[in-house]
Image (cartoon, rainbow over all chains, first blue to last red; front, side):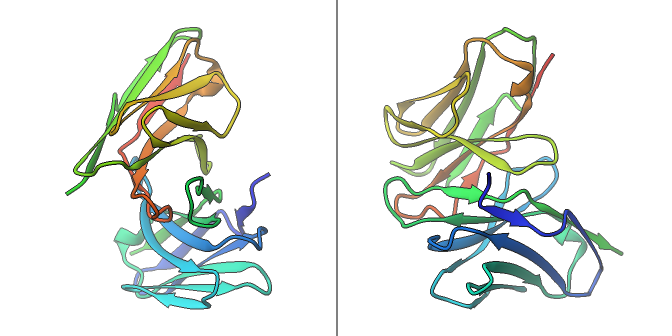
Amino acid sequence: GESVGLHLPTLSVQEGDNSIINCAYSNSASDYFIWYKQESGKGPQFIIDIRSNMDKRQGQRVTVLLNKTVKHLSLQIAATQPGDSAVYFCAETLALGANSKLTFGKGITLSVRP
Amino acid sequence: SQTIHQWPATLVQPVGSPLSLECTVEGTSNPNLYWYRQAAGRGLQLLFYSVGIGQISSEVPQNLSASRPQDRQFILSSKKLLLSDSGFYLCAWSKKGSYNEQFFGPGTRLTVL
């Protein structure tokens, strides 16, 4: 089975509120954890990644948190906007090398209410 | 800047017919290339990846195959399509040594009837 999964299939938030999307993983040997965003009818787009030796990393309006103790990953989106409506995937990868590849979770839909 | 192209955008094929999906990348050289399949409402399943011309790694046993005849060209093929081959096929590339950030193409929506 997949080693990366998501707790909830859908998330609905009010425009302007903060969003928190959660992900559980099972492979403690993974080196990187990544978030992708997929808008309807398009390919996924890289948002942010975090190395396994970090707990937190911030980007533009997004923050990724990693809790290795409970094997939990989360993506926080500040001041959620209508353009944030999409499916979000967490992914993991092992050591950077010739055979590295991503393993994606199932995805969660974020719906932003105006 | 780099761009990735996939064609066709949509395809309807009968069961048992052959398949050829093409992906090309512009603006970069020696990329890693990937084929994924996404079933409706599901996550992305890695089918094949390639680190160089003629080098193909298969992730899932199935009736699909992949080839990389040129550095920036990746082809997904099948001799006989099955109903279960329906889905959204995505090609992606990444820089060598940068596997976290993959750049995806627009995808091909395949319906097998």
